[in-house]
Image 1 (spheres, helix red, strand yellow):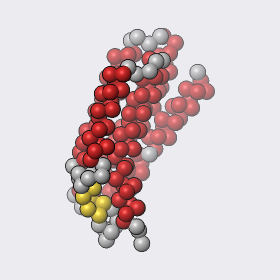
Image 2 (cartoon, helix red, strand yellow):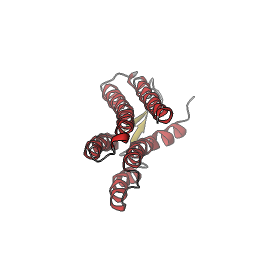
Image 3 (cartoon, one colour):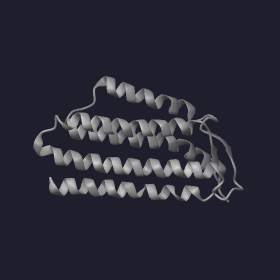
Length: 171
């Protein structure tokens, strides 16, 4: 007997946590490559991205219904999921653009390290995003098992951790 209040609360904050993971990955890569903190304006811009999620999380734009009788005992997600997907895709593209613009300015001995960090983050976030997006599309079309696909996105984290472990041991 699932407690719908418990599920709704935690499901509701998932979008915020996911965006923070993406921003954290960008921040990590920026620090790793540039060896300095983000400027105030970068932080302000990235903070502005989070504001709609903070404001919409407790509203029906995030979750508008809960169906305890469905196979997943799942909430019905609102329009904020489209915003979340857009922000996540934007951050992935931001990471790609940042890396290729910064790559030419990286010292020669640090280029391999930067490539491994970039590849690990890109594989992790791409796997996480694609499985989340595909499972949402399938669920919207009536495939109740679709959210099981999201579990495969977590394998991207293992790949990222393997890249980090290699960086730590090798360099």
